[in-house]
Amino acid sequence: MLLTKIFCRIFKLLTFFLFLPLLMFTFPAAAKPIYSVVGSVKQADGKLAPAGLKVVVTNTTRQLTAETVLGLQQRGKFAVIFTNFDGQSVVGIGDQVSIWVNNQSGKTVVEEAYQVSDTEFRAGRSIRDLQIEPVKITAVGVKLADGQKPTIVKAGEALTIAHGVNKLMRLTKKYYLPIQTSNSTS
View 1 (tube, rainbow, N blue to C red):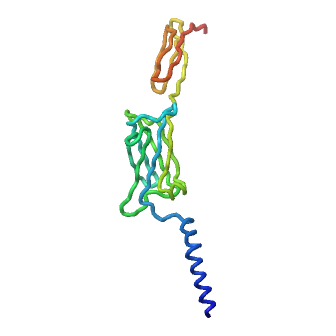
View 2: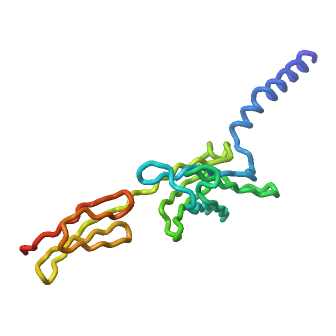
View 3: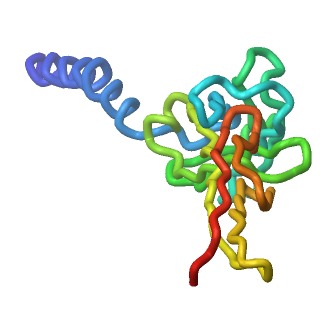
């Protein structure tokens, strides 16, 4: 009888000190009432984006949205916090989260969608580093009535037509393209 009591006591202690902590780290908490999404936004050249861009983060699974302005605390950085003061979860493993960064005219310059991982859920935050894609520049040729072939340059939504010039044309603050005209033989 004494041996049984000792065995039971040892078993309880082992269960409490060894197995219970393992179970706590194996299964995530049922509710996560606070969750943050932080990160940075870089320009196409790799430098941090200027302040003033609007950052919108949406947990589409739970229909929650938070907004901030890039660079409020630090250049090129953003942070949003989802909270629920009633203790209900604002995020779960596998939740679909989308981030949009919009310029001053409201156009999306970069976006990312991801699923919340187990590691992010446990940490209570997601860290995302976004990069704005460079402006896609294409050049196409057309034939004019006078036989000249101008170059049409499209940089994003901007359109420039060069006719009868042979010079360096400035398209944006940082990108330059040579614009040349040629006589069309076809």
